[in-house]
Length: 127
Image 1 (cartoon, rainbow, N blue to C red):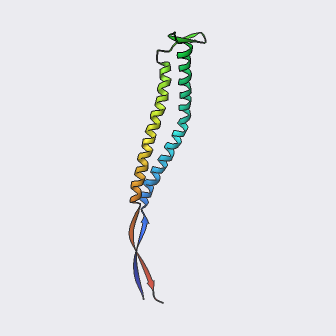
Image 2 (cartoon, one colour):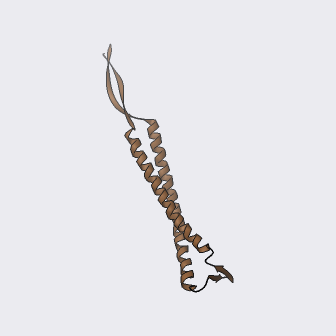
Image 3 (cartoon, rainbow, N blue to C red):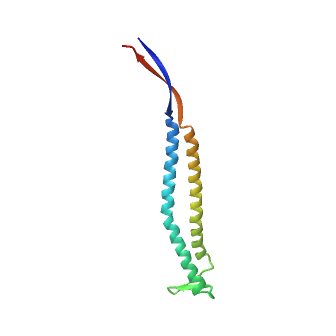
């Protein structure tokens, strides 16, 4: 004959683990996107700096510049658009950082519910 022993154990809840993994995967993806976009911001920074140099130093008293015999007025928004690209990258990075921070907080909250206490019945058989 045998008897049973009931113990309490912690078990991981698979539905919570899945949510945590999904959040972490999204954080990883956003981080990769941010790293890839960093090159674009560097290019935009360089372009803004170059355009400002041309406009403000070389063409200080003109309303535009000549390039390959084409007159380019710099007050029509062309150079400002490059500046907006640079600002847009910075804004995008800020937004990505906020989303990552939110997801990290969500993971912390989910981890509180990751484990549940369950009763496990063990049968002990007498020889």
